[in-house]
Image (tube, rainbow, N blue to C red; front, side, top):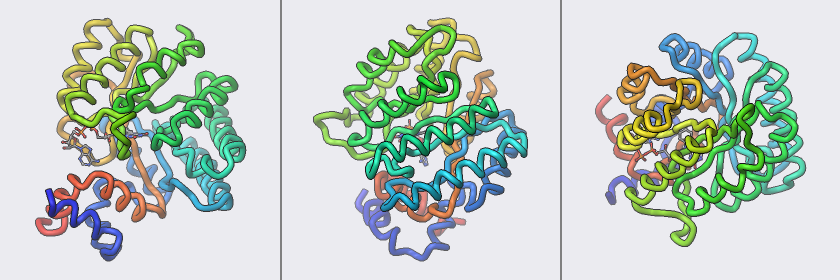
Length: 303
Ligand code: FDA
């Protein structure tokens, strides 16, 4: 809708406190304490968490160092607070597109820290210029920390099914590949990405089926009830037990569907973003997905 597009374009120029009215439903806050509090609340509802420090596509390597330090602090605080959470990160916020060796070393240090607590780090998947780099990064880190790292794959990319097959060489029954499967959030060219809802969903379920066939560990990340239904069928078809997969959702999104998945006896993990960069993050996400602007209109005018 035109109005949605208009609002999403205006967002970066709107007062921060107005955008916060909408964003606070989807972001835990600015501090580590806010993220831990959100995780604790979700834990009390039987939901696991994965915490992400907001920040991506940085401009210099000082920012990469600062982001690493924030993750190292986060990990110590989360483990101290004893909440059930792992960690998610975006490699561009450690300088992936500036100096890949620097980014690799920062992320390695973060995974080593999480591994020292027997915890886990998920490498988010960013836009297509990052795909090969992020797979390479994942392979390298998994070699050293086989149980402590996972990757995100995007069903809208035409290459994804082959990527899953190509990574079978680092998969084993003892330490299965751990993939979060999502639709994909970036705007990608038609040459490399499915664009239609039905095409994306068909490939999502094909990719998920391949993961179950190969006994990989899928994190089924979606708020789309059709995909949730499709996933239920695959779980039954492959007789997957509760500890062989999990569902995942974003903080604040579709809580009713989330509850119904839990009530059906499946495990659920919620992605909790927090940090000082929440304004940039919200406006970027909203520009990418103007349909979400409808929710802003509601939040601003009907609260
Ligand atoms: P779809 O877009 O069809 O949404 C289904 C319904 O859910 C919508 O009708 C709407 O009601 C609701 N909804 C979905 N997203 C919403 C939102 N943000 N706010 C409000 N309502 C919303 N992408 C990526 O490229 N790289 C990544 O690393 C990740 N990581 C990631 C982690 C987790 C835990 C999740 C759940 C998602 C991601 N994503 C991601 C985002 C993902 O690619 C995708 O863009 C969104 O999940 C939306 O796709 P759905 O499958 O929910 O379906």
